[in-house]
Amino acid sequence: MDKFAALVLVILLLPLAGAVLISFAGPYLPRVAAAVIANGTLLVAFLMTGIVALTGWQATSSGQTIPQHFAYGTWALIPPLKISFGLLIDPLALTWMLIITGVGFLIHLYSVGYMASDRNYRTFFAYMNLFVFTMLLLVMSDNFLWLLVGWGGVGLASYLLIGFYYDRVSAVLAARKALIMNVIGDVGIMIAIFLIYAHLGSAAYSDVFARVASVGAPALTAIGLWLLLGAVAKSAQLPLHTWLPDAMEGPTPVSALIHAATMVTAGVYLIARCYPIYDHAPVAAEVVAVVGATSALFAATIGCVQYDIKRVLAYSTMSQIGYMMFAVGAGAYTAGAFHFLTHAFFKALLFMAAGIVIQNLGGEQDIRKMGGLAGKMPLAFWTFLIGTVAIAGVPPFAGFFSKDAVIDAAIALHHPVLGAFLIIAAFLTAFYMFRLLFLTFFSGAYRGDGAPHDHPMVSMNVPVVVLAILATVGGFLAAPLGAALRLTFVGALHDQDIATINWPVAAGAFLLVVAGIATAYALYQVRPQLRESLIRALAGPRQLVMNAYYLDTVYHWLVEVPAYAIADAAAGFFETFIIRAIPLAASATAAALGGFARAWESGQLRRYGLTIAVGVVLLLAWYVITAYAAASQGVLPQ
Image 1 (cartoon, one colour):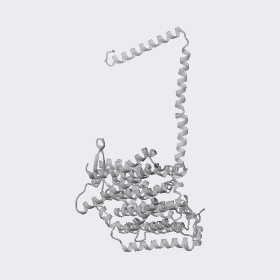
Image 2 (tube, helix red, strand yellow):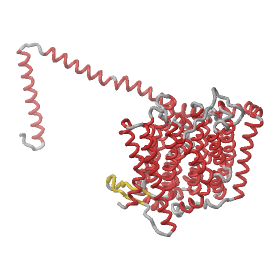
Image 3 (cartoon, helix red, strand yellow):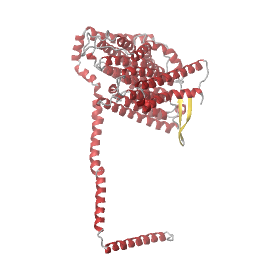
Image 4 (cartoon, helix red, strand yellow):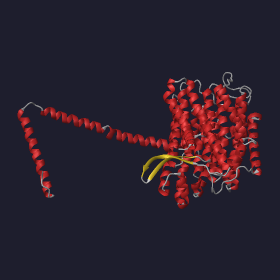
């Protein structure tokens, strides 16, 4: 194993080592040691990833070829199937690795202060490191089987973190819901892997992607759609999105990690990684694009009427992931990856700034009970403002460049209807994010109980400031990122140059953003009475959107109620006639035999003699029967 391969393996294993060390040695270490271990492993992993990325960039810029695939041995051999453990390091994987370790480290550092008073402090950091490890395994694997291991591991880690406050029924139910939704997606990935092996004879990316041209479109379409099922569940897209808002029951750092650096971006990575399949399966690719654009608009409408600060951000994540999914479905893979990068900056920033507000208000999350906080929490306000203008798409902040790259791709690749969905979603994004900003930090005096306070913590403030800077300048990474990703998406049918801005499209999108901001300002700052009139006039549609179009209710009646009814009926039958009947019959038989034995044990010698005689007769009969059977087959009895 050369030094480069060892370095890559260490990057993967460092978070796992931190999780294991905290889990086993944590109870014997000071609380601060858990934070040091968790943060230290992430920081070192990020620095090592930076070294790998810089080494790769220098090698490719000089025209050299660097090893991208690292094989570490055979994990299982079931002829003809050979399962190797190997890692694939290319610009696509490195983009995700830098965000997972870099933004993940900032979220870990933020957690030091946010979780300082929690009694399960050590456990929290063990779970967080486990989350990062499983996500790294997902993006670094060089085959579908190990991707599936990371895929399931991410689901497990999210279950542990969403349900971290296990003494809350709502948190336990939210964790269970997230796990069930993600298991549905896991089944889709498994079926896709079965189909991949059946049609392509391998699970390794290099083999599969090299052979896709030899497989018919129907098979590739089926594979692409099953992969999409996994992506939809993990990335909270329609119709398997309902777990994401409920996942806000977890601690705020968990929300930041799930939304910005890890779980919900896994689906985007999967589609981008499998671009040769989707390039040869246009029907499946079109379905990905439709799901993404529809989810973007769908979630944006719901975000306009939510009052929980974290739920607004949750629906905004679903909407922004929709942009990414549309991009990779339409073939604009680089634009999708670019929006992932900028989204990681401003979404982590928004959640962490919101976390400062929530902590300073004693856990309050209802924005109707906030207001007037701009002067009382200046750091939270200014950083939240930067995140807001970035996600809205105000130049020169990061979201302007990446979101417009996706919208430009929709127009250039001839998706007028889906492009309209994205443009309307951009207007709504600007509206609901500035609505959130105004209700939280302006709109008169503070409306909650008591007096708001601001207790700045260095461990919380530093990551927020760093992310605010990245959300400001991150859009200028388009040129180097685009140049690097061209080395991954070699031969892609429709991928575009993200470094070139289509100014007419950008100007039109920006005018819509301004309109969204102006609408929010008018309704929540200038004319609140007009807002109340609109609420009364649109009470019916508003109720529909506030309840997320009642999809949870639909699932309850279509899935949950029938499942419970079937389970109750089956339990009633099996419990009564099988589960209970078997031990009762066994005990009754044993009691009957015991009673017979007691009755026979009378102490009379003639009864015992009769028993012996009957036994001898039965043995002789058995011998005669077996001897006759043997003789009939020409075999002499022994």
